[in-house]
Length: 68
Image (cartoon, rainbow, N blue to C red; front, top):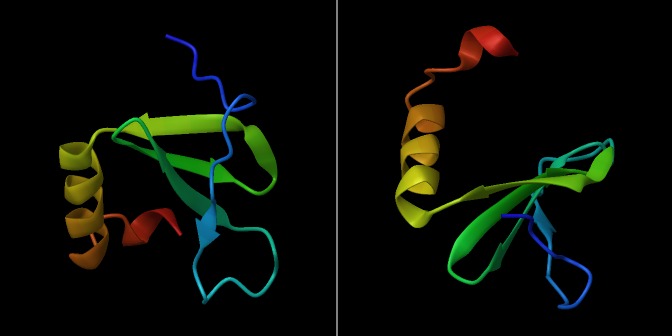
Protein backbone atom coordinates (compact mmCIF):
# COMPACT_ATOMS: atom_id res chain seq x y z
CA UNK A 1 0.00 0.00 0.00
CA UNK A 2 1.37 3.39 -0.97
CA UNK A 3 1.25 6.07 1.68
CA UNK A 4 -0.32 9.31 0.53
CA UNK A 5 1.19 12.27 2.35
CA UNK A 6 -0.15 14.99 0.07
CA UNK A 7 -3.78 15.03 1.18
CA UNK A 8 -3.27 15.44 4.92
CA UNK A 9 -0.99 17.69 6.87
CA UNK A 10 1.54 15.75 8.93
CA UNK A 11 3.52 17.48 11.64
CA UNK A 12 7.10 16.27 11.38
CA UNK A 13 9.42 16.42 14.39
CA UNK A 14 13.18 16.05 14.55
CA UNK A 15 15.57 15.68 17.43
CA UNK A 16 16.83 18.73 19.27
CA UNK A 17 20.29 17.16 18.79
CA UNK A 18 20.00 17.74 15.03
CA UNK A 19 22.21 20.72 14.30
CA UNK A 20 23.16 20.14 10.66
CA UNK A 21 19.63 20.12 9.26
CA UNK A 22 20.27 16.67 7.79
CA UNK A 23 18.20 14.59 10.18
CA UNK A 24 15.59 11.92 10.64
CA UNK A 25 12.07 13.25 11.11
CA UNK A 26 9.16 11.53 12.78
CA UNK A 27 5.41 11.92 12.35
CA UNK A 28 2.25 9.87 12.65
CA UNK A 29 -0.78 9.07 10.56
CA UNK A 30 -3.56 6.52 10.97
CA UNK A 31 -1.91 4.97 14.04
CA UNK A 32 1.40 4.41 12.27
CA UNK A 33 4.73 6.04 13.09
CA UNK A 34 6.34 7.65 10.05
CA UNK A 35 10.08 8.16 9.61
CA UNK A 36 11.81 10.08 6.84
CA UNK A 37 15.10 11.80 6.13
CA UNK A 38 15.30 15.52 5.52
CA UNK A 39 17.54 14.61 2.57
CA UNK A 40 14.84 12.45 0.93
CA UNK A 41 11.50 13.55 2.42
CA UNK A 42 9.39 11.63 -0.11
CA UNK A 43 10.81 8.30 1.11
CA UNK A 44 8.82 7.40 4.20
CA UNK A 45 9.05 4.30 6.38
CA UNK A 46 5.89 3.29 8.26
CA UNK A 47 6.14 1.38 11.54
CA UNK A 48 3.34 0.17 13.74
CA UNK A 49 3.63 1.14 17.43
CA UNK A 50 5.18 -2.22 18.39
CA UNK A 51 7.84 -1.94 15.69
CA UNK A 52 8.62 1.63 16.72
CA UNK A 53 8.91 0.65 20.39
CA UNK A 54 11.29 -2.20 19.48
CA UNK A 55 13.40 0.26 17.46
CA UNK A 56 13.50 2.71 20.38
CA UNK A 57 14.60 -0.01 22.78
CA UNK A 58 17.28 -1.27 20.40
CA UNK A 59 18.69 2.25 20.00
CA UNK A 60 18.70 2.81 23.77
CA UNK A 61 20.53 -0.51 24.20
CA UNK A 62 23.19 0.54 21.65
CA UNK A 63 22.38 -2.37 19.31
CA UNK A 64 23.12 -0.29 16.19
CA UNK A 65 26.17 1.64 17.37
CA UNK A 66 28.45 -0.09 14.87
CA UNK A 67 26.43 1.44 12.02
CA UNK A 68 27.35 5.02 12.86
